Amino acid sequence: MEVLSCIAAAPLFSHVSEAVLQTAAERCAVRTFAKGEQIGGVGEFLCLIRSGSVLVSGAARDSALVLNKLRAGDCFGVASLFGSRSWLTAVTACEKSVVLLFSQKTVEELMRADFTFARNYICFLTDRIGFLNRKIAAFTAGSAEKKLAQYLLSLPAENGELTLPVSMVRLSALLDLGRASLYRAFAFLEQSGQLTRTGKTVRLTSAEEFQKIYGGTTR
Image 1 (cartoon, rainbow, N blue to C red):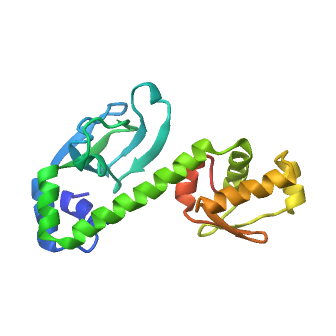
Image 2 (cartoon, rainbow, N blue to C red):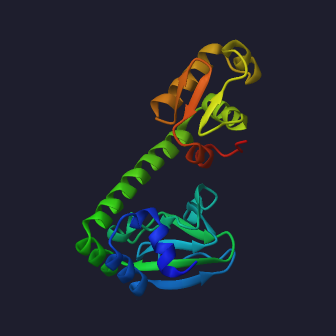
């Protein structure tokens, strides 16, 4: 994908002017990272994945803590660009990956040139805060919530909506949970904004995000 096309397709640049897209394409640096290579510059650049995929994990002793997997069109380094350079995450290429790098100076120029880009940036940060809050909720969740989440991910879903194939009594037995624990697990996932439930119908707020947080597979 051409640099300009890649930038134009990214949600962060949605509905911005042609002039801003052109400026972004001219000012960004293009770097290729080999599989397993750690991507440096996080905290110094806004990064947009042109091709490939990367893994975001805890830095140093928390390297085994996987936070997210990002693919072509996704961005990272957004929050740390204007903050501390002492970031707490590491980004590693899962395969050969091409990344576009935008300096803080370039990002500031784009914000001044087009308010839409600035708004997109703020919305992106807001979404990331929500994702991290839900990730924290998953880390602090009890085994009942995790069991339930894994079970839900095993069910066939369409547009994030799935139907429980068994009664709550049967489900509690399948998951080896007491009925009270099962209801509390559903309440936890609902209160943390990850799903809504009406009878046997469950709608995931974001099936993709739910999978990233709890792992497993969707069918």
